[in-house]
Length: 118
View 1 (cartoon, one colour):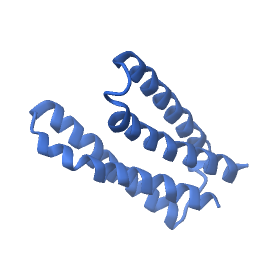
View 2 (tube, rainbow, N blue to C red):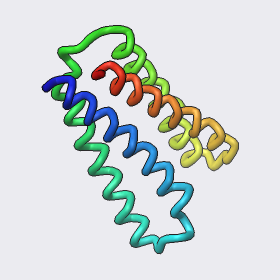
View 3 (tube, rainbow, N blue to C red):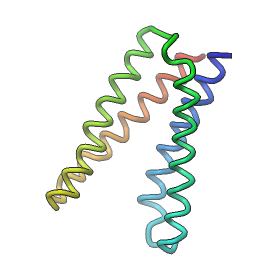
View 4 (cartoon, one colour):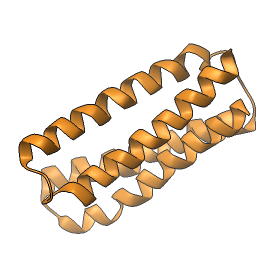
């Protein structure tokens, strides 16, 4: 059951990150601000619950893929979230160029968890 929850959680989180990026880039201007907020709420709850599934088993697993996933998440936090924080606080728009690299690091981490479950 651990591998099942890890696989479902990792795939669900991978999809949540992908849908979050799609919402931020593909739906802005196509949806009203209210409907975009609804979509973002769906993504947020999707990710929260995917993380809970992963947390149920993460402490009991080890190995190269798990370590790669962990370091990919650290890189994603620094590059994705860090660049957004810096952009918001400084207004320097070139910092936004780093954000997709962090998003890719998040996706690599979730893919590693999914493969670890298989």
